[in-house]
Length: 168
Image (cartoon, rainbow, N blue to C red; front, side, top):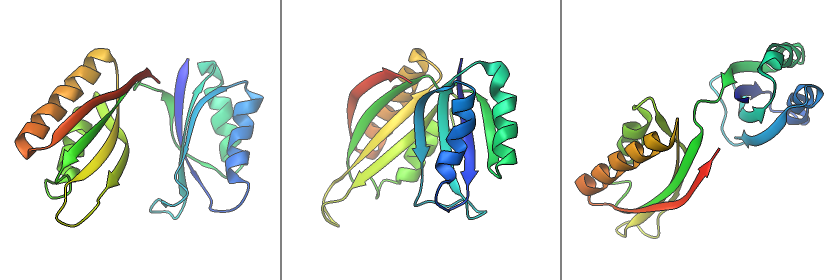
């Protein structure tokens, strides 16, 4: 079963390797690791998300081992976002309130923006934003894209889609 875990690691060498050890011991197949080294949580920790395939009955063993190692387990369980698509927005992305655009996707409950990259060539020039959107299924990806198209029309942004469609 595909599971995801959100952890908080101390900002010291070896913590990521320490967090991987219980997954190895429980024969988890690692699908992805997102390690935000430059971003700290309010507790001053480094946020990390693992997506793994493993026997769900072993998740408690993994969580216990992580806690014994001093690693904070923020969330662990079934990964409900199983589809993803990448799109690009072109126009005055920041001036049109990028936060609002992201919130309209995130507030649905069935989709979220999981990655964002912004390019700004000049102050008065159009910018572009790469967004990777995850959703609970293929139909939900289409609903999220419909929302994004509506936002694009409203804010006069060009929506280039999809760059890729993939199962997570």
